[in-house]
Amino acid sequence: MLPSILARVVLGLALAAGGSSPAATPGPTVSVEATHPFEPLADCTDHDGDGFSECTGDCDDTNPAIHPGAQEICNQVDDNCDGRIDEGSDLDGDGISVCDNCPDVYNPDQRDADADSVGDACDNCPTVPNPNQSDIDFDSIGDLCDNCPTIPNIDQNPCVCEQTCGLSGPTISFDSPEGHGSGVVRWSTGREIDIVGFNVVEIDKKGTRTQLNSALIRCEECVTGVGHAYATIIPKHKSGRGIYVELLRVNGTSQLSGPAVRM
Image (cartoon, rainbow, N blue to C red; front, side, top):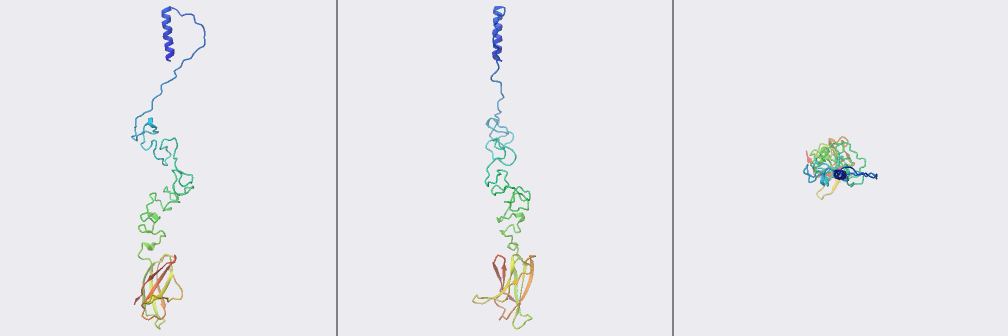
């Protein structure tokens, strides 16, 4: 527009000086346009106080969590203003980055049965919603589904935190119907968890172990898990001293209880 205005001023001066317009020789028409139209400047004020403004690349200057260099999180928003949404590293190689519900465990199906935003592949309570994954005893079983949340028991054996588990007794009496020096050994269980059965053994002063039952005494409540009272007749014994009940567990370990108290 400026060249056009100048042309009109020059022409006006010429007409004023000469009184008339000189004859003009037709020539090519020249169109003159502004080459630098006005453009509004970027706002350089940091409106959200995050240290960045539009001038320095802030793509949302109303949200202090969004700015160049911000951590990208799973929210369908370009948090770091790099033109991409929810991008990031894929540590476990399952094809999912910041929105991976198990970022350290390969789980491309992202299955989450309890809908707590923690994938089943890494959820310490996969059937109970517990988004905070609290595990006070660090046994990899979440507190909300741990049958003993304050004592480590990764196999979830309730006997770890219940005093009623295991074996109580034993006692021995001489009222056996078989007579001839035989006796009855009695004991009971509070809960039968991971138990196979029992043996009645005699241990002498030298530590020699002698099994007094010919076959393993099978547990009666292995399936139900409740307790049971047991009684078994043993053959001749001198005084009832040195009589123990041996509890055998599924994992191959054993627990010796006694000596039996004479009744």
